[in-house]
Image (tube, rainbow, N blue to C red; front, side):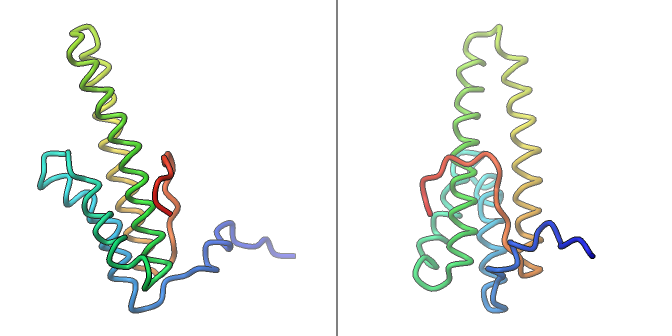
Amino acid sequence: MTRPDIHSRDDVAAYDSEDRGAGVLAHLSAPIAFFLSAGWLSIVGPLIVWYMYKDRSPQVRRAAAGAFNFNISFWVMQVLGWVLVFTLIGIPVALLIWGVTFVVAAWCHIKGAIRAWNGRPYEYPFQIRILG
């Protein structure tokens, strides 16, 4: 008896071939907006993609909503880091929070974009669910 693939439930809602590019954009729009706005507008890219595809493609809508929700969670961490910076004692902790959130966010967005390119959905960790 062979063991089924661990990710077999993800294959149920695989991307259509036309939606792959939009799915990749949904995942990569957050880091692009992050770099263009010095970190403060990372939610705008996924929100725009979600708005454009919310009624056209459930796969792209899910990817954009996941990226948006994920970035809201990391906004909370960024704000916590800024609060800690202003307490002077918390500067090392703030730097650690910012470094970890940057690496985790980069990893998750790249992994999501690769999965979308391959036609598979990606579920972000650490989400504050706002969009669906």
